Image 1 (cartoon, rainbow over the protein chains, first blue to last red):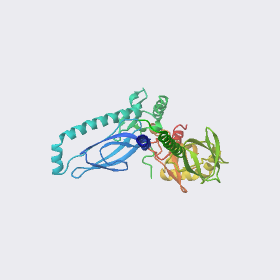
Image 2: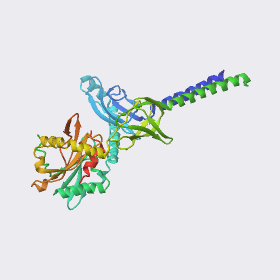
Image 3: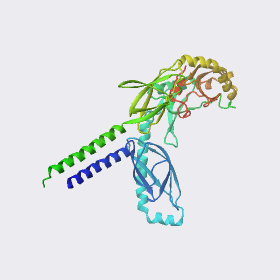
Image 4: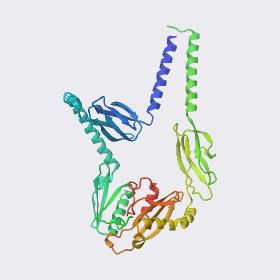
Length: 200
Length: 203
């Protein structure tokens, strides 16, 4: 009877491991750092609290909140095959919350470290996703291709050329370097689209 | 401690039953019932994988092994471009999209051309005065239009060739964005990338 019980226990464990594996399939490990720790998350993401979670890759809009603290609204992206950290450090508003923040400086210091790590990961992702950044600026006698950062961790590629021909040459140059212009936000500097003011 | 032969039998049978149960579970879990939706009056579809081709009946549930397949399409006015699909435990309906052949799209363009030009000139009154519309193409189901606008005005510094995409919504054509020297997936998030790419390389 003892042997059967052990076998059943083993099978049960295997079954539980299999189910855990299945429930995590296609999801990424995400560390959620919230300050205060008992803040709650709402939004289109399947998590509510701080801690370790498995979340499907994608872009989510979340709001982190706790009584007495200002809400933190974020657009978070869970990326496949990468370290993912969600950090929310809530600003105290009520007197009670301010006192809590004063008494728990260590939590804020730790959250800042998590925030620095998240920023570093975001920067790595940015460079990985926009390899064009490593190539810019490109300066040619007839055109210059540069970039400027946007708020959403993306970039706008800027093209400066003195004539339509040179601006088109800049586009062709990007293609020849393996960058498809259709995939970038592109801005022509010193160009006035004749149809801009024509729109009715 | 030595076990009696009977206890050994019970142990083996229990393990055997659990193993069989698991194998049955794994086997049934490897399949998924899916329904393919398409207009069979326009064409037919076949499912293609490493084992061969299987005909698909529209709107009829079919039990298939989970995995990747191609849907091959046939029809008088349909392009033969295959559609790649993946069936997993969350798949229940797959829309098979028939895109028109280039010959049929050319015929449609002849019918739609004046409506498209009217829409463009209504939105941009000077467009026909400043630009010549060239290299027009309809895409997919004839609901997407792309062309280039060759400058013929006097402002040579700003005379870049522009690119434009319109979409037919119901019976009405709509300009998707300001005609620009380069169209991008960022400014046209709802337009398929292959269409944007094609319009961008028109000369």
